[in-house]
Image (cartoon, rainbow, N blue to C red):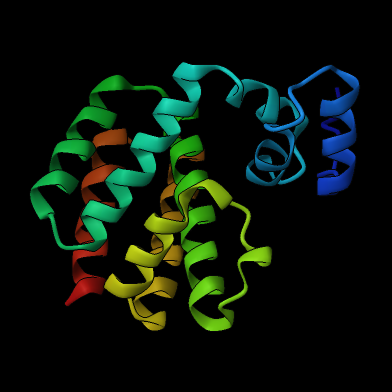
Length: 171
């Protein structure tokens, strides 16, 4: 059995697939950009529950960046108790995407380069709360947490460690 990894599609290719599948034309640009070349993710985000969950994750990240340490600890405990590794990794990927967009928006002021077009207020708040060195430290912390999730480390330890790393990067 061989693992075959497929690369991501371009935004234009993703838009074409969504269009071919009859997705509402007004949703296509946002879904294609947010999904970053993953048509399956774009289709999943059409579900109101998935979209609402993603919006909550973005709001959580902004609260943590603005210094709400209690929110960080609460979300760490809730995620660890859920025991859903795939969902935790998905959240980390969403956060990394938002953080990337905040750094791009902060340094270039070009909204056309931003994937998460729907979350510009959150990106602006992140850019205000985190300078570029802290943003890179957070990105590294998220990537370490993703590796740990894949490495079958205890989820509570991963999340507690992540919250502490983010707090340390704030100082």
